[in-house]
Image (tube, rainbow over all chains, first blue to last red; front, side, top):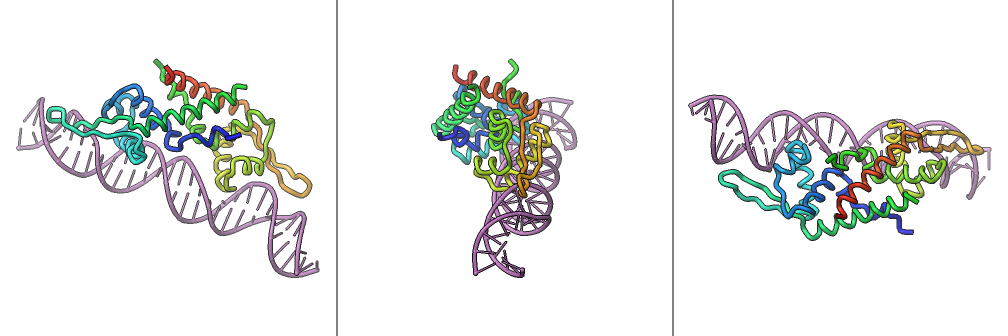
Length: 100
Length: 100
DNA sequence: TAAAAGTACTTTTATTTTCAAAGTTAATAA
DNA sequence: TTATTAACTTTGAAAATAAAAGTACTTTTA
């Protein structure tokens, strides 16, 4: 039986975090501000979700300066990649089971 | 562009509530206890999620007695049906966009 | 037959999560 | 030099989640 719901990733059930990963899947790296604009989130809100992904080790963080401005870039970790795939697969299984 | 994430239903992002609806899609009705057993949830937890679905008018509630025992059954409302479909469609779109 | 245990919930309380406002530090503009 | 902007981080309040406790019976057991 093994119901597909149990394969869902709690961390990725929140759409903001799923979106962040889906952006990082297709972009080698992405920075804080771009994420903020793309997702239209407040600074604090984005920072909180980022922190969750970071704590899970789903993303890697790189801080640097571009000229005189600080810049924080994120990349998907291998763990994050796996987790994302697994979650998407679970969603797919749920949909399939639904469509019959 | 119209990104599929924006079509997700906040209420259905929680897997318990998505599961409840997915059960009610294939079962004309289902009662509290059966849901509790199927989903392996505490009474309070299930009741809270049910209340959210009820407030959204996604489910209809019918209370009766079976012999001497109270029995609460739930059915999917038309609104719930629509919402479920829309959410699943959004998930499908997300997956598709991901698979290319 | 009285007390204990069980059923089917509901209500309350505690914890966790989410979100936005305010704060920080440094640079640039007026 | 004061104000504004940039790029975050921290704080605190509100909302969501989950489990424990409570309620109102009914059934079982000593």
